Amino acid sequence: MSTREIKFRGKRTDNGEWVVGNLINMKSAQHYGEYDRDETIFSKCWIVEIAEYLEVRAFSSGNAVWADNEFIQVDPETVGQYIGRKDDTETEVYEGDKVMAILTGEVFELIWDGDGFLFQKGNYAIDPLEFEDVCAAFGYRIVGNVHDDKGVSGND
Image (cartoon, rainbow, N blue to C red; front, side):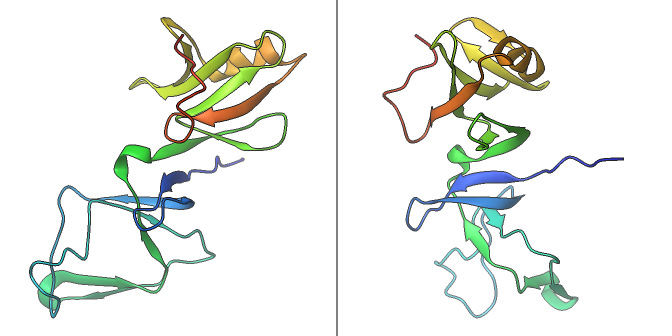
C-alpha cells in the first residue's frame, strides 16, 4: 500500500520566499503569556518544516502547546497543496501553479474546485489524470504560478 505525500507550499510573511511543509491553519490569531498583548505570536497560517518527527510539549495550565520544530508564518492567500505529481523537469506541482502543455503551448492554471484539483484555461477545465493522458506523449512544464508570475496567464 502506497501513501500519498501530503504537503503544502506558501510564501513566508517575513521575506516572501516559498516554504514547503505541513500546514497549520487557525481560525483566529492568538496572544499568549509573557508576550505583549498587542503582539500577535500565533497568526492564522503556518507551515511546519517536514522532519522525521514533530516534538510537541503540551501544558495543562493555559492549554499551551510548544513544539521544537520551526513554525514559519505564511500568507494564507499563497498556500497551495502538492497534488502528488511532477512535471517533465521533476518539479513538484502545487495548487496555483501554471503549467504549459508542451505540444500546444497552452497554459493551464491548477485550481481546487471544492471536489478536487483541475487544470483550468478560461471556462475549460480537466482533471489531472486526464491532463497527464493528453500530455503523455509531449509532456508539460511549470511556467509560473498565480502568486509570482502575473505575466503568464492560464485564463486568456
